[in-house]
Length: 518
Image 1 (cartoon, rainbow, N blue to C red):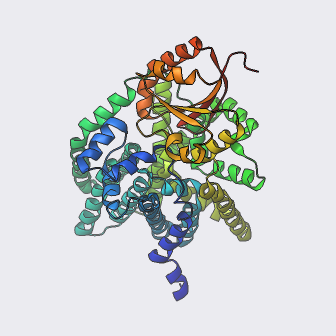
Image 2 (cartoon, rainbow, N blue to C red):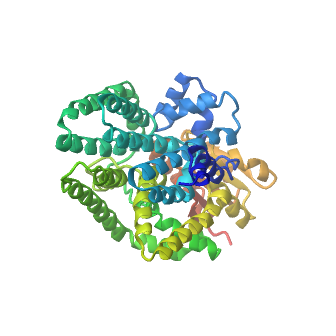
Image 3 (cartoon, helix red, strand yellow):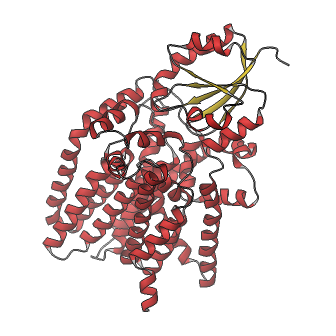
């Protein structure tokens, strides 16, 4: 390799490239559930644990790091910079896995796919644990690839210790990362049992350490889950568009479709045909997800068991497939079980599957490189990167985020004087970010579960008003009783719902007006 080429593909240069892609837009206003991390930056460590147990549903590691990072500054862009750095570092490690384990070209194409991936850029700019979970998951797989190639016991022990530490840390970062840990341990168990039985005991010790290390957090996890699910019926329908879309988006098909909409300047959030299509294709997409997940698992297992020699490439390919497919397969199974009433329902969101998206990028890169003749492969890779680059406009400008959609709705209804918010575990989104911009046009009213009647006396003085429903974990618990009280109060004051729009996965906006209003 030429000296210039070697310099370009060095870790610092790749990190800088990934960082540059992720920096634009990190100064945008706070959105959705980023508030928990903002609040955590000003807490003590014990205060963070209390915050997570009473108001959130994540492990504490990321919030501890935000607390330490926030000692230098609590500016929103500065807090987000930590997530940006995690996401950029993950891109470098993904390149190293591809280049050192498979081939330099697979490493290079995969690097550009994950660097430009709209999903992975988004979670790198989001003030939540997803980018740290991505980095730790990629690091654990990287260390596994190293330990499989370790020729002496000392190197093996060093890499196994590193993997064990990453597994513990990722479990203290994001609950869904458990599926990645399960996938890696399934691979290690099968591999050692088949090819290196003498190292099976060492793997067992590693697995026990990971389990024991998690025990101190287990009571807090139990308290979180009891709070989150205490007000939710086991028959609550959870098969929403996001659940069906996460698989398509994870393998980047959704990103490509949105890129074409961007080129056509089509606002997908208002394209009713898209919504109808997603709604009616829900059962079909579910079958595709299940069939795809089972196919990936079968290919990984059968491909592994057909390995007859000590070559590592097929085994590592199986590891990549398992890490890509097992989290999605497990999440779908749990979701379906919840919808059938067999298990407590579990909410699925596209951003939970950044780890799977990163490893699907290996499969996508290998497929693109296999296209013949070579100029078609090059064209396909360039076209994919260009489509992703166009799609990044949506991430940078964020036209479909809560803030922009709220502003659009507010400007669409000039005759409304009141904005009503339900309480939530964080300060209501509208009241926090938009009140200063519209204080001359709108009054704001925050309703609480014990203040419905008092609030209705203020609402009754208006003919039309907005209602912003922020659906957080705490709101899920409070909402059923609160909603019934509010609905009865609306009927007594002769209000009816004129229109309703879902702004995001955590926010719904409804317009209420007095019955008979022209």
